[in-house]
Picture 1 (tube, rainbow, N blue to C red):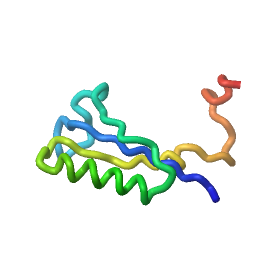
Picture 2 (cartoon, rainbow, N blue to C red):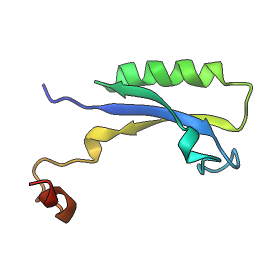
Picture 3 (cartoon, rainbow, N blue to C red):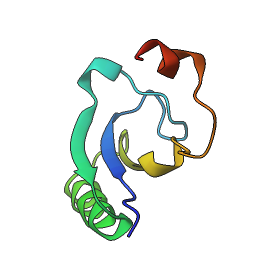
Picture 4 (tube, one colour):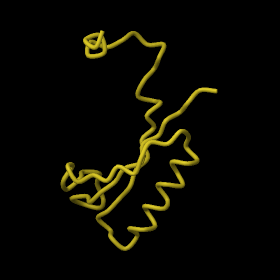
Length: 81
């Protein structure tokens, strides 16, 4: 079975209608999860915990979509040798 990693993170936004963080150094990384179901559960818990703060928002990033094992390596990957 293919592993599909997901990252859950969030923090305070400059404007709740946009996705720009007020201070990227203060982003809360909830964790990396092996599947969408567990990432969603973690996201939901954080979103519910901060529901009263309109400027705080959490996201799920699909890490498995960032890397295509079949694609040719990019220039930065080749530096790692």
